Length: 292
Image (cartoon, rainbow, N blue to C red; front, side, top):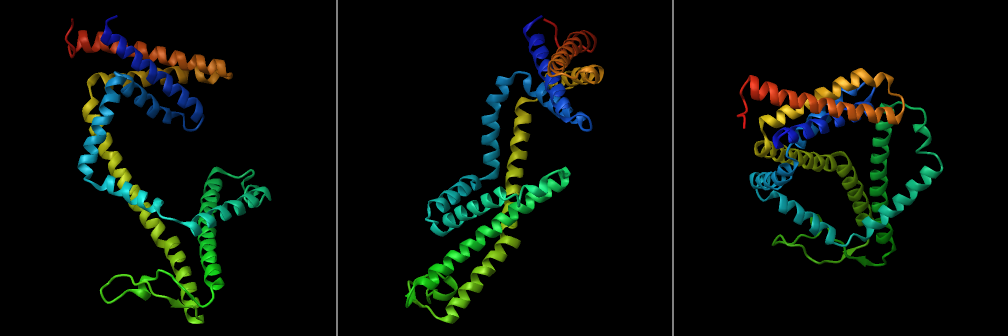
């Protein structure tokens, strides 16, 4: 067995094993999704070092296409994290403590017992939204406590109230009156509602869209750099070997040892399919590969 045939056998073995393992995890209804693992294992398993070398090149190419938005996003996040957030952090830890008490009391965990997967996912998502709302409400409460505890006058950055004629923020003292107290109470609640209903989802959507675009361009360049007929062969034959072994032997594999044996057999069967396809079909029959 020459070097090229050995590399194909190894990649097909990886594809067959990964398909079988994934199929066992996803059985009985979604075992067929293991084909994704098998195809990825066989395709990337062939000359894996070349894949690792191509990752950096694809990353740089995707960054070049996206422009300078990536460093700008990182810089914006760093600038935000460097600012002091005393009320934000304090309210966050208060909310963590409150959530812990709710979990210990069974208020959060109890409804999850003996429920369907769809109910559990929706319930967990609702708990996350509840956590964020409670965090924001505690943040507003802390601001109000500070506001009401100050005697006389207080300093507060409120661009809509203290912007000067030249458009710059002015460091002015704002008197603590009933009108100002009511104004900032309503303003804070308005910001909470606006953030919860619109801004949080807006920036989440923008982030997901940007990340998806970057990931798509990265995968496109990676595919261009590494694609070859040999990889396609390994992806298909390795997965076919895993499918054959799983459909044939999985019904009788009840123990972990038996399932491991089926996975290894699926890898060996995939390797056999790959070698036969490469040596007999591609090289000798179709003449797609020059013989040494």
